[in-house]
Length: 160
Image (cartoon, rainbow, N blue to C red; front, side, top):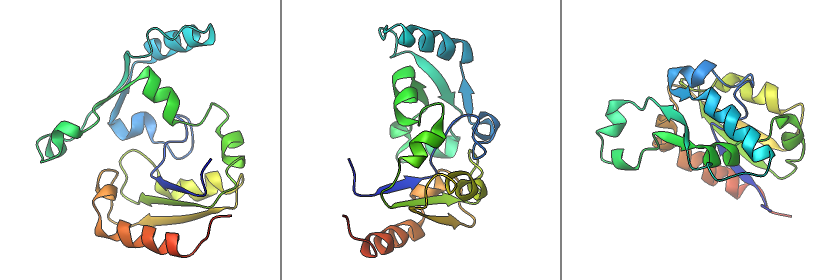
């Protein structure tokens, strides 16, 4: 597996205490399609996993910016099911015994950053949590503070 994990404003589950309703208005999930594809997946049918199940209201400042063409504006069912913990995310969190660093912005539009530690820490004690003021969801990747936080974390632990 991995020696450690870097979690940047992670999605835990649509109904986790860390998630704003509809990701703060950014996400438009096609719930009927998600339900139908999940039922097909439970029968072992994955032919339609390429279909879009969530679209994102990406700000025009991002879409019109220099990296706008690389912005993720939608998730397929395949992507949506592969990046998130399973329905009982507490089990997956409890299995996280390796060190991890979770960084999120206090102005995150999609997630409630203050809820990460109280939600995750009952399942695992291997994490460090850093919440950045005046930082939104997309800003997290471009804030100058992120690199030094990650470098500091990497320098203070050694893999088993």
